[in-house]
Image (cartoon, rainbow, N blue to C red; front, side, top):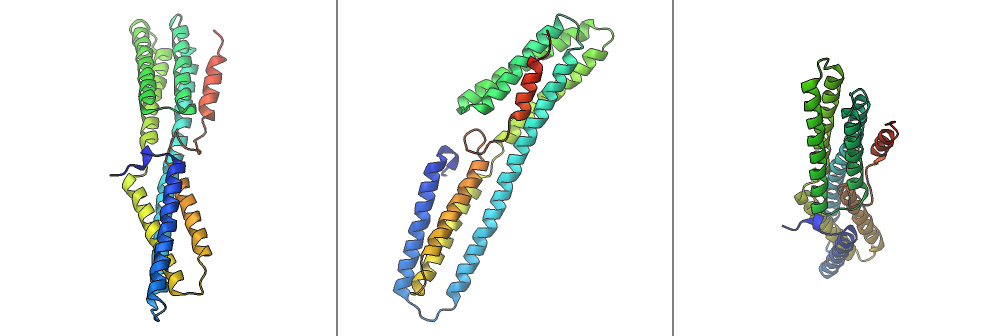
Length: 258
């Protein structure tokens, strides 16, 4: 099956818009051949197809926007968890305090860089592996402190925050990998093409009806579909969830006195 995620947004826009224009022209040609034979079903079918297109556009847009909001919330949750872990790390005894803060500084930099710079799947997987390796080092520090700390209050608070940090990375990765199903996007393009064909057919049947509004509709539908695809592409589109919470977390950790 054709996977739209393998193609760039400009290429999808050009091919999709060309397909819609071709459908309009074919529909107009077919309608002109049939002519106005008093068929009152044409406006009804045209309205039904455009209504179906509006329904699936709204449905798909809601899915894409919801997952975009989930990615944005996941960034905030992870940044807060890392910041809390850093604050509680200041309660730890030396040399664990310095080691943990250094690891957290490296950790937040990796989490930030992978979202700010375009990355392939291989680079993304490598960054996740680095994050997991740092998590393991942090956990080793927590285990060492738990074995030697009799009070356990600072260490226990730190372990709770570190657990939340690890959990929030998994939640953020899940949100980032959650996409609109490819079959839904293909259905969206298919219905847009068929609806445009019906609109073009109606202009052919009614010889006095201009095709310009249909062209404008096709352009707007293509733009909305690309907007949906952009919302659904974290890290590769034009619309990105704000990374400011992670930037603030990195700045706050860097400002902690040694």
